[in-house]
Length: 216
Image (tube, rainbow, N blue to C red; front, side, top):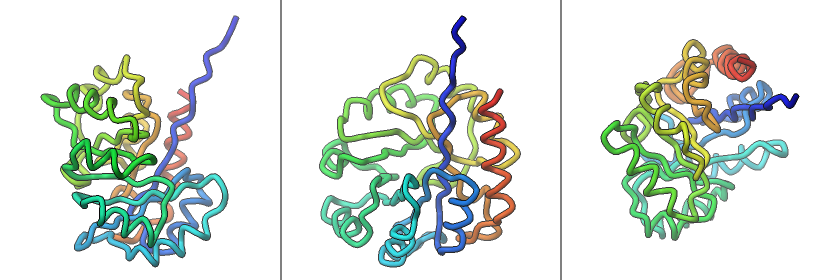
């Protein structure tokens, strides 16, 4: 009798602004760390500072740059300063813009029960999109949403890997994983001591909660 082996849930710790937080996330077992390149937001990091952190990452830990509503020239300027293997587009970018920024693109969008099916279908058709991130808030505002409602849309969806974000923390991430079985989860404010600074104990607890949920 064969036993189904469920892939483990990947973990991205986003909103990294300093080397210490990056090192703790990696030590605890994060698969990816995220840098916010949206000027004026509380977790913004200068691309040159992010590049220094990125170049110190160990093998098999991926840096992800997060941008919003930039044109292709703006995208390329940031990518040249901090050439992250993946770039997460977190705005109202068109299919044409996203395609021109790819490959290596994660396309993020807000969960809305009325549009989720069309959004999943829309971005599945863009070859340059490597994964989709479904968030609870516009532009990454960290709001939780109805995971059970999303689960019905993801049950038979296998066009692109799906990352779930928005309102996740050490207490509820296990519930989200059990409901959705996503490719990855993305956390930022849920493991912070203050905006832009991680609570290292919460980072460890979050990653431990993910690993425990994977065993269920």
